[in-house]
Length: 208
Image (cartoon, rainbow, N blue to C red; front, side):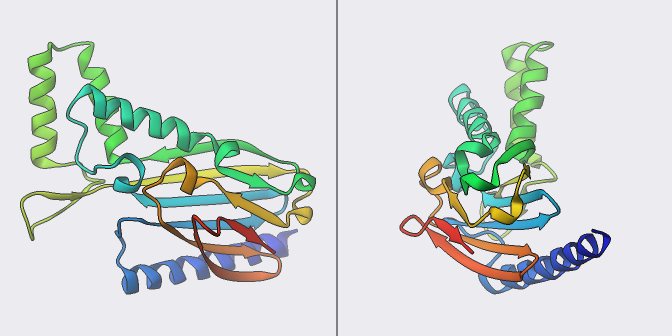
C-alpha cells in the first residue's frame, strides 16, 4: 500500500506539471474550457475541477446585486453535489465524502452576507464598490483594458469507493449542469498509469 501511495504521489506531481504545460500552451483562463484531474489512491478517488467563473455563472466580476449573489449561491450548491455531476460504474459503489468549493466570487458573497448583519444598504453598497475597485486576491485583474477581472471556480471532490478496481466508466454531467462549459481537459492518474482525455457535450464519458 505504501508503494501505491508513493506511486500516486509521483503521478499527481507528473500530472501537475502536465497541467501547467497545458495552461502555458492554451492559456490558463479560457472561456468555455475547464480542467479536471482525477487521482485514484487505495479506495479513494480525488477529483479536482478548475473553470473560469464565466462558464459557471455567466460573469466574472464581483456580484453586485441580489440576483447575481443568488446565481453564485445556486452555482455553489450545484457544484457541491458531486453525485449529480459524476456518475460512476455501479459496481464501484463510490460515495462522496466531502467537497470544497473555492472562488473569489463566493468570498465576496460571504463577506457581503456578514456585512448585511451589521451595516445598512448604503454601507453594503460601499463595501461592494470597494471590492470591485480593488479586487480580491483570488481574482486576477489585468491592466490591458478597463478593469478586466478573471475569476475562477476551483472544486475538490473526495469520493470513497467500496470497489474502486471495478470502476470502468465515469460520466461527467458538468456540461448539462453548466452549459457555458464547452470542453473539459481531463487528466487521470491510477494504477495503470496516466492519460489525458478531452471531453465535450457530445462525448461526456470517460472509459478505461
